[in-house]
Image 1 (tube, rainbow, N blue to C red):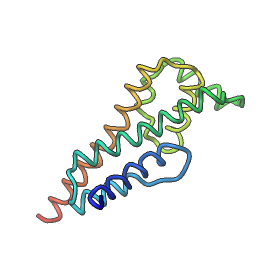
Image 2: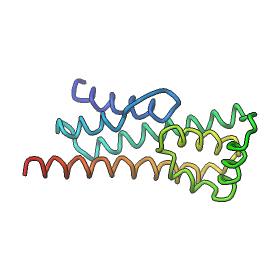
Image 3: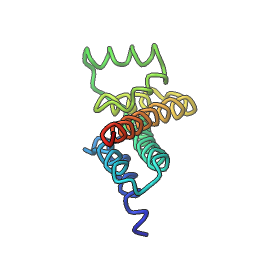
Image 4: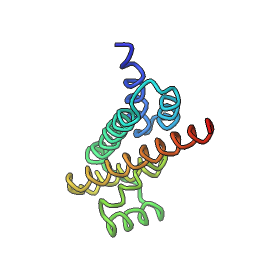
Length: 143
């Protein structure tokens, strides 16, 4: 069980990081990569799944609790989302903006298939990038 504790911690951190709650899944992933006790791809997959499920939670919340606020920024974001559609969820990994994109995708009742595809792809690409940078940095440092 203790072998799975770091992986479970990463999953929890990545899930919470995708919601409006604070989290630092990137730091947890980098720390676990540096520790070297788990497969890098296992860690990336774990973080990607946790973060994607957190993002999908925001999509569901957007469907349940429609945004009622109207402002210039809100209208502009809606126009942008309507124009580009679910592909905007490639940016769902961005702090705060990503949470809003997921909530608005739910509020707009975007189709589930494209939402899941683009959201998961965006989240996974971010963690692959962090893994590659961390592993390359460790190789350079050990030099």
